[in-house]
Length: 616
Image 1: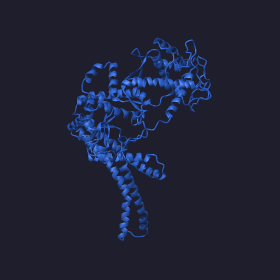
Image 2: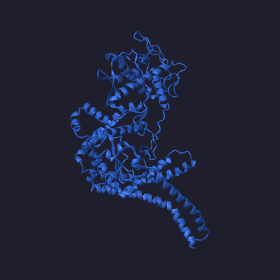
Image 3: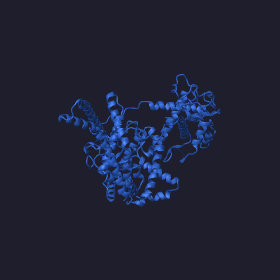
Image 4: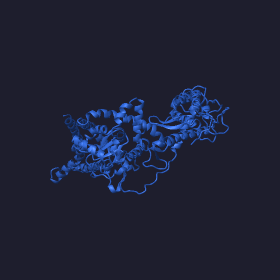
């Protein structure tokens, strides 16, 4: 009864959407109908006289213009390409067991099977209609995709939607859990096959695509004016049917959920818990582990496998290992793929593009990195690059090497130079006292604004005239010392200049193909489509660079090594053990100008801040 009620509600809302379409068509045809009546009356000698003649002369051109405008709008709506989610297509020969499981579910649910399967680098699953001609796959002999994904055995214009599965689910979930999670999703193909619901969805997607076409920037004033009118009409129609379309989708979801109740109901409760865990592990892996590598031009090529390692570590820390160990003995869902490594690599590259804006293909400045190489290729390199940038900024500011009995005789970079510069006993820098307080001398007698004349000036709004950050633009620096605030602002400006430098153009394709690349079927002009984090603040940049300098000193003077923590990302290992309590000591130095806690920490671990370190 619940399935029928949901389906009937969805169909009723679909008919309401289609009635909106019919009313729009009737409004477009009304002037033409009136004009035809007037012309027919004149031909039959019935509607004669100056008034009827004037009406004919006025309404006939208006009817023609309205018909032309309606035809143009209809053409734009019909030809506009609906948005398509960026995914990794998986052909049946690349995952026969997965296709078999999906078809078996569809048979048990008594619904049409999805026309194809694709993976998305996110923790979600859905059905996506790709019946538009622009979404149809190209011929098999001209299309080369991951694991033969282009060699589709289905029709060129499949009626059933495509099943999109979150790639982390395949690696973390067991086969039974994945089946339980996909059951309500696949059940949605039943209502989707109804002609009224399918027609209503096509109409709404066409209007949405037409709005996107009208919003695209154009230089031609004529086309801008024409498409502005098209966009206005499309938005008006969307607003008119938005409520009915939303209720239609709710009815479809309710009908699918009710139909899926009969399939693996008990296992679905456990599977939903795994969905939440997979999302938590995936988010932590992207923000803590993948993002540092992406910023360096490297992309981890086994992100989905990393989810398993991250969640296993999370279960160990939360004392859930026993319960997790029992389920990990079951068959993982990635075994349903013939080449899981190749699929994971393709999904990892797509994730880097969506969440960071990386290139669509590997290159000299965008190369993959394996997890075994991550500590040396990413962590060590990141720390040394940050330390080198820190000393370049200190050089530009005219900060001299460290002084004292333990200072080296050379001008090699040392951690002591940074600690001496940031040590400050004066009041903290605040928005209120920034204007009254001049630049403060550090413990070595150096003034933070003593930059040579040839040093490049910081951008307007980054630092004030006295060398302290502008309180209007750097609110996050409030509460730090003047040397810290100045160095943080200079680091932020230096990093902005590096990121603004033009990057090398990507290499041209080896053999241009007349068929479109599936990646070109979604708008990638505003990459990243889903940025993970807002830009780092100046305070965060200074903390990152100071931490990197400490880690470089630990590696070069105390035998420490770079490491990878699956939940926290880059980490410092001393004698194979992860170091702790570094972050609060770094913040104490930045905010209070007190280096004593950090120096004590360095002494306890045998780290020599006065020794030179290797940069770059």
